[in-house]
View 1 (spheres, rainbow, N blue to C red):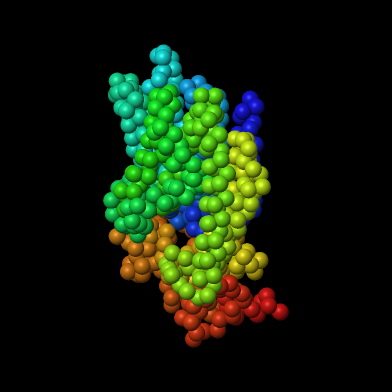
View 2: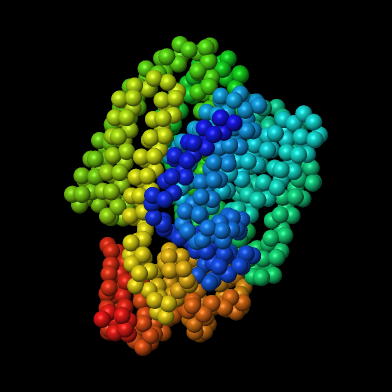
Length: 585
């Protein structure tokens, strides 16, 4: 029990506490919080909606859990983030519980803690996004499938097999069929290289297991198809097959994109990877003792990287599953080098680490400061990757993290594995806190949106003018109208069938000459889609109107009376004359 409490204590420090320290992030957190809020508010649990419009891009499991939390605790951001944080905790506990019988309690404990104390895991686990839940379900399915293969009785075979099938079906309902590919690929490759191919066949050819997984997915999409015809085609074809093989989502990156993401996400443990690899290369006896689970850790860590490197759509969050494999790998290695058999190696490694860590982080700090000075001097190396003004903030954040870490390690003397975990936790707290906070300056406009919430009155019309920001309806706790919007609304059509050719809904309805349109089966009177002419008509009438737009777009409205109320570095809130006359007295 004390081991479980230790894992939970690490989780509280690195995940639970930081949930309250940074504001809503764009665009993913804003999108999923609003979907979950509407689900809880409207009691419509079958098809996802965002600002009153259908959202068939993702399956519903993740939002079901969040919406249930909203029902209990209210639509608060921390509730949604807690879903992700708990998913990372449960994955860590699953690693410990499932592996301790085979690799020992100490190695399993270290593996579960390392899985929690990596930069990517801690960073994503603090955000309200799908990937932590997806990674948890896939990781649990992997561990259960391994237990099926290693089962020694029919009872355990069926028990773990049914549990793995249920978990795998849930993974597909969390994000998609990539769960089946990754879990199946990892377990199959591991079984083959460790000589468990016959037991793997007993798992694969069992029709009951396949029936359970397929039935979970089929029942949902059968019911959803009745509510929104075309949703299955859109999700499985457009959002999975076309996303992987084409650049339909315009998220193409170089094939090597995930390699630096992998090593950066595994910090600070990534610095020790060369030592771990060299150890198992040098000491064959250690490899022989650990090889079965080492193969699982290696395949678990690298297969998601390889799979998504071949995809035409790449996002950093896609390989979150890999870092659990990294945790298992380091659990085996750290336990092995701490045994009496390798005490001399451990002493030598201890000396190298004391020198290496401060040098690496001080070097990173110096590099970051140099880049910060360059950008502050006005040298723009890449506006696409680093929109100003986040550049100096990012650089100083990384530099501060590096310098603080170096000083902590230097003064702490690094005397034991316990100290290693303490220092690593400090690195993660500083790193994720600063990077997440600094990164939000690049994409988020939470202060301006909170100001819009303060200015809003129930009878006002709120319009997004040529922008799409789903943080607004979540913050205001109501649906809002839109004008000339491009983005997530592109798939809904007038006959409630999903049109893959429609770029976004306002274009489609302008071509169809249908005004103020929402899909036939999705009445949403608050969510009106305006053309430019219609927007001007509404803005110049006697109803108070607030519009959220980019500052540069105000020029498009120069021929009518526009009253800018407030702005940040990119966006503005504007009001019409009726609003000013009614409230600004």
